[in-house]
Amino acid sequence: MKLFHYLRKDGIENFGDRLNLWLWPKLMPNLFNRHDQITFVGIGTLLNHRLPQRLDTEKVVIMGTGVGYGQPLEFLPEGWTVYCVRGPLSARHLGLPIEKAIADGAVLLAQCVQRQQTKKFPVSVMPHIHHAVAAGDIWKTICQALNWGYVDPRWPVETVLSAIDGTELLLAEAMHGAIAADALRVPWMPIQTSPRILNFKWQDWCASIGVAYKPQYLPPLSRQYPPYTKGKHPRITMANYWRRCWQQNHFSGYLKNVESCLLKISRTQPHFLSSSAKLNTLIEQLEGQLTQLESDAAGDYFK
Image (cartoon, one colour):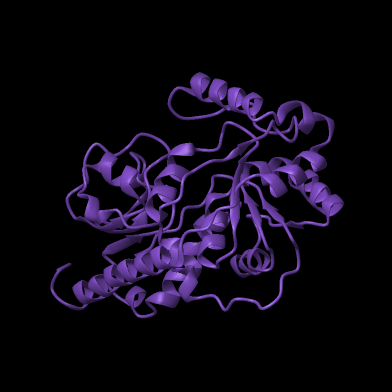
């Protein structure tokens, strides 16, 4: 079975995408040694009109994947088997029964990572990949000034996981940073520093874990940021982003002193973490789908 791994056009590796190569072989070590006529699509916001063009097999397995970027698929191609998707919004867009909405596959990190006993930082920040590329050095300088940790989504998977596990709170623009934190039982807080952050995918995942999506909106950290947003209704998205910056009263303080504003947010705004009971239920459901997939692959289902 071929393991699909999305790679950006610039060749830069992103934590959420790279997780596929790290996580699934640990969970199903024998699955990818056979059935080369099938492609396994797992972690990522990949379910859009471009996905069929990116795959070179007609038979496809979908496991914990999400809808979001690009145009939604008008229909699921013949030969595709959906074991589960990221959340209820993805299921609704694809016309799938709600039972197919479980959680993002990265939730299963809870089964593969040995948690640390000590914490290195009180707070760490993990920006979105776009903003790490555009202003990673600036983010790093800010975090150093606050004695916080900086987590770069371009780092190797194990380095990112260790950094997340070593903090008491993660401020996350990168959704899979927040998912990893939740799986490792590290409280997290969603932030946005540009309108390029896709609310839909966050809302989809948060709905799956029973947590409200309430990000803190901050103005762009640097003029080097991409000055626009993509997707549907970009002007509306940008207008809503700037309106929320003003509503949350972060705008003026942020421009005067980024460090003070971030410190205030970390101390005064709600931190998030799914309940242990909910997380365990999702893990059991995802593992049940993996067991079903292995059973199907061992039998005649894909022949």
